[in-house]
Image (cartoon, rainbow, N blue to C red):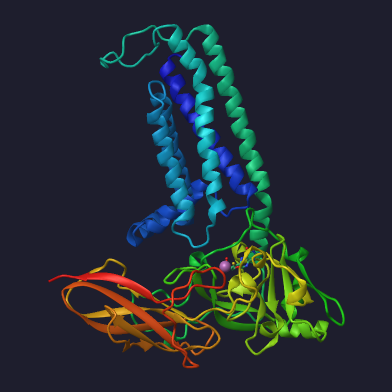
Length: 525
Ligand SMILES: Nc1nc2c(c(=O)[nH]1)N[C@H]1C(S)=C(S)[C@@H](COP(=O)(O)O)O[C@H]1N2
Ligand SMILES: [Mo]
């Protein structure tokens, strides 16, 4: 090592590598789909204009993602070297650069995907803390040397800020730094390899998932009559990548389907155990079903609509033979999460199912692979068990489930609701006719119509699309005349039983929010 300037840069690069390694290990240990660096690469791809992306794919072929990851890593090395040099004279400057990098990673992991949950940001946090610790550790011998003598630096003589100095560190500091740097490099390699090993399980299950054949599972074909024809409204079909995700799993269960089975027991004539292959051999049922979270506030986004394929629970429960007196099925997930579902909802004509596929493909791991429950008309917390492994036929009076012990309602039928998607809140509009559009749902009863009101005035009927099922949301649209000034738009739905959506505002706790969605807009003169 000729100059300490190089030493500071090297300290920065090694500290940076250490943080990337620990974040990679954490992501793999929690079986998160992608490490932060890959998440950044995916978002760059997502945000790249189509023409640029096509040109890149032309040149790079399908190696565009690995190449991009390589470029991001190279840029990071440059930034880490800068961080190292900055840390010579300041604590704040390098910390701010690292913080900016960490925030980029966190945003990439969390923001654009519906599929992230809070713990997905943990790898970024671990990486950030590692950066700070490793940087302090590696630069401490350099700092000692700086304090002991005049700064040894070999920057170009044209740099007036640096006094010309004999290059090199004192021997003891030099040895201390080299030992520290070599140890850090070794640790980075070990942590990186460990991350790769820990991630092998998920990679293997992803591989198996990619090869799975599910007879009777078809790809979704959005019925044209389900579309209202307004572009800006939420897509009727929610892509798996955009589907909201809610679960209590810190580490996502990663289950090899050949090892999966579900046990049906309790108040039954005979206990039944069904393996994945046996389940997959049953006749499939398929349906459009909108899934709702009870925590969805009025106007919120914890709702999605997908094409689900699976095996009717009525069939499976009939094989076991439900005994009289039972009114609930206690469902348990591989990760121990539980919910209790009314037997009636699992056996009536709504075709509740053990789903194997979402939008024509095996369930994504985050959405319950290999098997989850889907029950039209009930909130997810009382019905939609992901990674389901156990169904105990029982009585509500005899069991406790995860969320009901925390104050949420025992039964969770989905409440009718409606949402304004366009115009957006705070939109600035031209005076005249304005298109208002959104989605509305009254699951398993069906939406009969929606009405829109301006500034609390009379309710005016809008039009609705007809998806041909009562178990999904419907897109709606209305035209309103707006004069210059500020306005409040509101929507309310009516279901097929003639019930009008209540304007009474209730919180999500204990069994779902009520009230009308409203949007503030201003119209120019
Ligand atoms: N194993 C398990 N299944 C679960 C949950 C959970 O925490 N663990 N959350 C439920 C809740 S509250 C909802 S709203 C839905 C969300 O399903 P999704 O993440 O596929 O959108 O899953 C349900 N199934
Ligand atoms: Mo939920």
